[in-house]
Length: 181
Image (cartoon, rainbow, N blue to C red; front, side, top):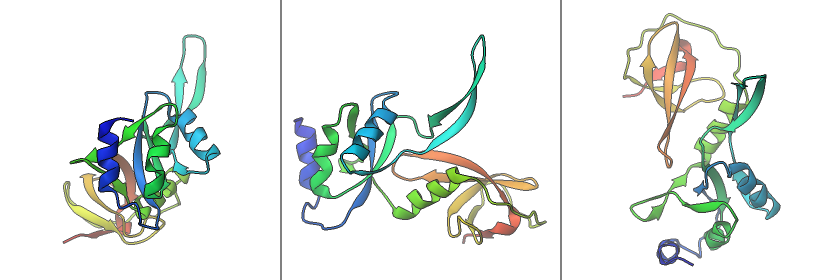
């Protein structure tokens, strides 16, 4: 076992009786295999996918790809931390300043909603400007905070996923947004 992993484990509170979402970094293109192994071990894991159309010289095919390549979200007790690293294809946990990055349950829930499909929404004439911080007031993503990156009929909301420093760009109707002060 690497000394770095032991140092990180020593920073975790091993006697905490609750699960926490962490971000696991995998080898390139190993996300699905690692995810399947995690599920077989009984580890709660989340690997968001999106569908896209790929063009080959002889055909087109709809494929599902990881939304965040090389990242899997795992919900574990601190004493399961090292066992997850033993899975073939897993590399390390995403850490900031030597501490494993935690992801809130709300972020996981919001990601699940985002990839499950979009509800029908209405358009309004509310005015917003680029760069403005907003919070969703209605709908499935209520209370999600983001930043306006484009103003038009359907506002484009930038949602930052803390812990892996990734962004999602989503079209949201203006009547679903409130300004954050």
